[in-house]
Image 1 (cartoon, rainbow, N blue to C red):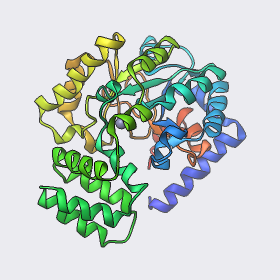
Image 2 (image 1 turned 30 degrees about the vertical axis):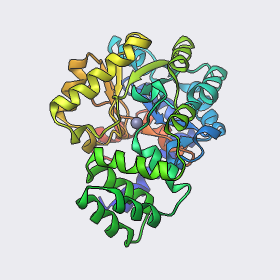
Image 3 (image 1 turned 180 degrees about the vertical axis):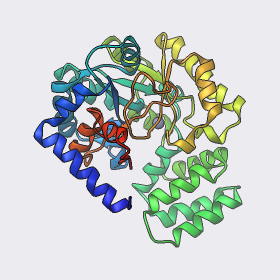
Length: 350
Ligand SMILES: [Zn+2]
C-alpha cells in the first residue's frame, strides 16, 4: 500500500476507535497488553535548554495520565512484565523516563501521585555522582548560546578526528535540521572519546561548569532513592550512554553489567534496562546478550508498538510521547487496534 494512503487509513482507524469508544471493546477482545510510554523529562527550569522532543509539558502529561488511568492499570515495566506472564487481568500501561533527570523528582513525582500512577526511570550511572554527563548535553547547552557554524568551527579547530570534522563541515552547508544532522554525525560517525573531549573543551571555553550542569540537570543518588521509596521503579541505562552497537561485545558487557552493579550498590536490585537511544541500529545481538548476562529481565527499545506475553523481553516496544503526540494513535496502539488489523493482514505500523 502506498505510504500516504496507509497513513490516511491509519489515522481514520485510530480516530474511529478513539472517538466512538470502540477502543474499549477492542481492548476486551485482544490479548492482554503492556504498553510503555516514554520520554525523558517534564518541562522544567532545570531542562529548559534540552530540545522539545525530549520532554513533555506537565499539562499534557496530566491529560495522558488521566485518560489511560480510566482504561488501564498503571504499572512499572518490571511489575507489568511479571503480571503479563501470569495471564489474565486488565491490560496495562507504563510511563517510562530515560536518563534520570532532576525534574523526575520535583515535577514528575507529584503528578504521578495525583494520578495514582507509577513509572520506571532508567538511570545512567555516571551522572548520579554529580560530576559528569554525556556529550549530548554539552552539545545542546552550546547550541543555546552559539550558532551551528561557530560550534563546527571550534570543533574543527580542536578535534583530532579528521573524518568527523569533514563530515560536520559538509553537513553545515546542507539544508535541513542542522541540530539533528550535526548530532547524528557526532553520534554515528565520530570517535566517541574525541567527541567527548572536543565538546568539553568548547563547553569550558564558553564558561561551562560540568559538575554544576550535571547537578542541576540530573538526579543525585539520594534523589533516586527518594523516587524508589515513593514506589517508582529504577532501571539501568548503562554508565556513559554510548551507542551500544558502536562497541564490541566486551565493551557492551562492561557498559550494561558494570552500570547495573554501580546502580545496585547504592539503590538495591534492578530488573529493567533501556538501550541508550534505543533505535534498532543503536543496539544488536551483543547488547541483548549483555542484558541477559548482566541479569536484567527486560530491555526496552524506542520502536513504537505494544507488548504481549510472547514479546521478546529484550526488545520491548515503547511509544515516545511529546506534546504533539496524538492521543488517538496512542489509544489505538494501547487497545490492540493496530494488532487487530495485522491479524487481517493489514499492517499500519509506521
Ligand atoms: Zn537515554
